[in-house]
Image (cartoon, rainbow, N blue to C red):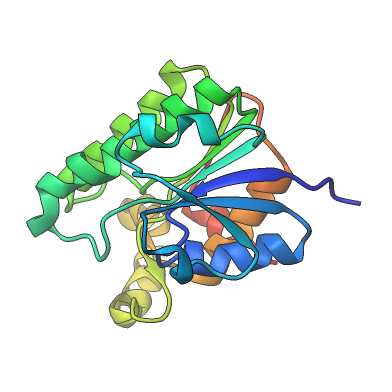
Length: 218
C-alpha cells in the first residue's frame, strides 16, 4: 500500500494544480494549498486553503510544517516572450520563496515543474526556471524536477498541429535529440508523473525529461 503524504502545494488554482489536487486527495494524501485571500473557493474540494502570497516567503513559511512534500506549481499563465519580466518576478521569485519555506519547515521532498532546455525560443523562461532549479540544489533539497516543454490540455492545444513534425524529426539523426526533448506532452502525462513523484520521493535531485514524461501513466 502506498504511504500517504502531507503535501503543501502552491499554484493549486492553476492549469495543473486544479487537476492534480483531486487526484492526490483521491489517493489519500492530505493537501494544504497556498492561496491569496478571496481565492479560497477556487481550490478543488479536499484541499485546505492556506492564505498567503507565493512571492513572500514570510507570509507562509510557518504554515508549511508538518508537510513532508512540497509541490511548487506557481508560474505565469500562457508563457510567451512578451512576459519575460514576469518570469523573474513571478516564476523565479515564487520558486525561491518556496524553496526557502521548504528548508525552513524541514520538508523531505520538493517537486518542481521546470521546462525542457536548451530550446531555440523562450530564453528568458528557460533561464528563470534554470535558476529556480539551482536554488533547489544550492539549498540541499531532495527534489524531483519535471522538464516538459509544452503541456497539451484544455485551452492549451495549438502545438498539436506540430506533432507530425516532431514525429518526422525524431527519425532524422541531427534533429532526433531536440525533437524528443521538445515534443509536447499531455496534461495527463504530467499529472501522472507528479503523482509518481509524490509517492516515490527522490534522494538528491531527480530530473524527469520529456521522454519519461510521455511514458508516465496513471
